[in-house]
Length: 126
View (cartoon, rainbow, N blue to C red):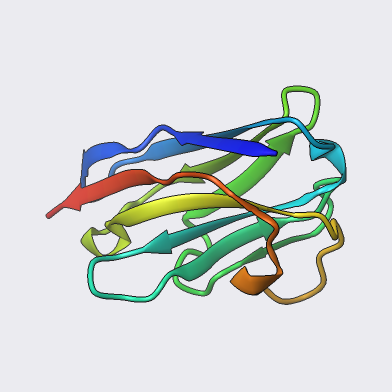
């Protein structure tokens, strides 16, 4: 499975971006999909995860109410809509696929993911 993240860029605080992650190979529609981010000097942290059928979604507290994760299984793509961006959202954003497609009440830990994309840079200026 290959994951290709795109959509990052430079945006002013308060602005919006939509990230996309396109999958090739594998059975995308059976995977849970997650977004992570890593800021300079910090550990990679989970942002959001969506179950295989899109019915279960979990967000990190830091992005609740501002970010929306969604997926289109026909297009083999997962999205992350980011609104009201803040400078502290600046990071490299990664998408990841978990072959165990079920999502509970908590974010899926990064070591549970099976495939990773290459990352896309998001920079929010103040």
